[in-house]
Image 1 (cartoon, rainbow, N blue to C red):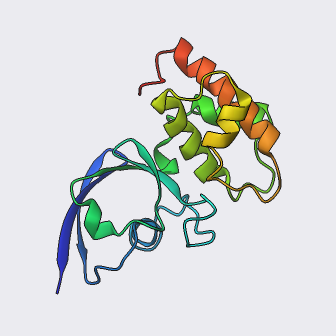
Image 2 (cartoon, rainbow, N blue to C red):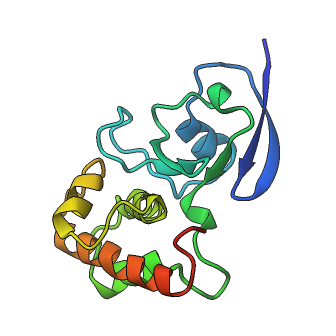
Length: 164
């Protein structure tokens, strides 16, 4: 049986045919659509490396069945920034050494963008750490990540991108 779904991925409407209803969004992105920026870490929803935004919400793409998302809008790390210009969150991660090995960075950045858009972080580093706790950094770059989120949040508020 073939399952046909429509997804808007990084702004492009895609009609996708799946022959297996058990295909996760993560595997669809990486293996079928060649969007390999979203990382497969634990494949159990515990590390956050596969974080993407679905209809503006942060989700672990390894836990979401692609067929259940028919009609949804998906944003991956590939959609972040513009040609020749980094997104404010990417700039802040670089400025604050918010990464070391870089494996978790795409998921961390997508989670940070979602968190900032949610408008719940405020200026409390502890609150940001709590709200980002679903994203594990095995290198321990948490101080830089927290500072990056605080800095990016200010930058995005200043240029009107917090809601975008």
